[in-house]
Length: 177
Picture 1: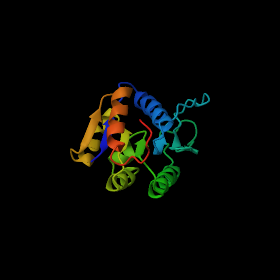
Picture 2: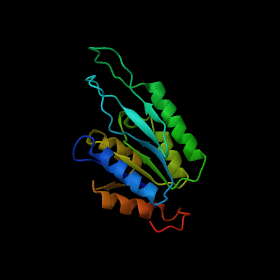
Picture 3: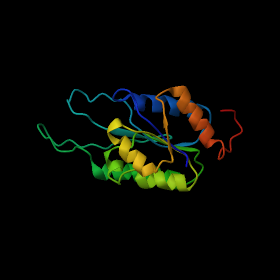
């Protein structure tokens, strides 16, 4: 199975690494689908908004909702998140994909929902998957992967090397990565 995860050393570090990796791979002609979480200021609202940039060319989708000042409930907009998952899945099913790149294996995935079916479908199709794995969800990710995953160091060159090895059997481009 070609499944790899990275855990950043600080909050947001994995997303920064994955964004840099996505940019380099795209420049090399690798066909990506998935989602990244871009760093977008919250406009001073004091809330942590979550947006997903759908690969390869968008759109940017807000997956949190404003519950009002003082709310302590989960701000995840399940409908918006499922819409994003649906769009990514459609892109995977359309074919011509070398790698699925996902910002994280988060709470939804740890609980058996979210992007898990997409990850399984990609792997079933022989498409490698790279995702961020927060420390809080490493055990769930390991259980999901059943020992068939690779945990990569949070280093851009190591991640790129894994990606190049993982896509080599499926690569149709002749361009040197």
